[in-house]
Length: 295
Image (cartoon, rainbow, N blue to C red; front, top):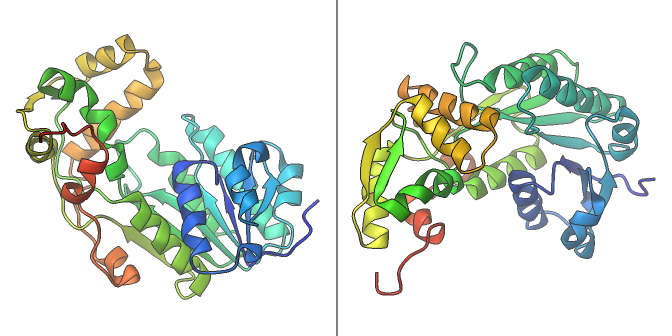
């Protein structure tokens, strides 16, 4: 059973964004004011060691959420990774309702930058969640997060090995650093100043994969040629490397979203919240991909 009433609780804190939000919160408030809700508390030892309250909460187990969220003044709901839009909506609806029952005064939700009607196959579950959150009766802030710079190695990996970056057609994308997102979410939720708002959080510039290939070529010291392939070829290539077909199809829909310009807008909101320049692809990419010693 929870033994403290935290100022703020973060779900999904064993994941990439959730854990980074907690790290940023620890720079701003004492550990005993923070709690996390995770499916596997044993995997959260690093936060236990820092004095963060670790609670078991499973979005498929409503009773566990009622216990995990107990006493939390503010709750940050990090979206789940379920590929089924309806199932993901139900999970996130469970979390929103539990936060309301627990008496939370402010709920934050990490959504996507794409708007209703997007070709991105995972967008619908986010939009259903946004609608439910706005109607739940608790003050909320919705974070429309751009695509992570940290995900670029997933797209670049095979190309760096072969010299050919074979990906579907894309368009300019305002790639954003996950740490910048996490710090801004932490600051907004602690301040309580953006209740009722939907905030578009993007990076400082919009780059397509032709430009990213140029940057990667400079970093590794050898040419990386951008080659456009159709969705079927891309999906088949991913499946041949062991990726589930549903995940491969979802990634392909992300390229279609970029090609239609759904991620091209550079929004100033994130930089205004942080009051500092945002990290760029050129700054972060050398820390994410293998760089030859003589490069």
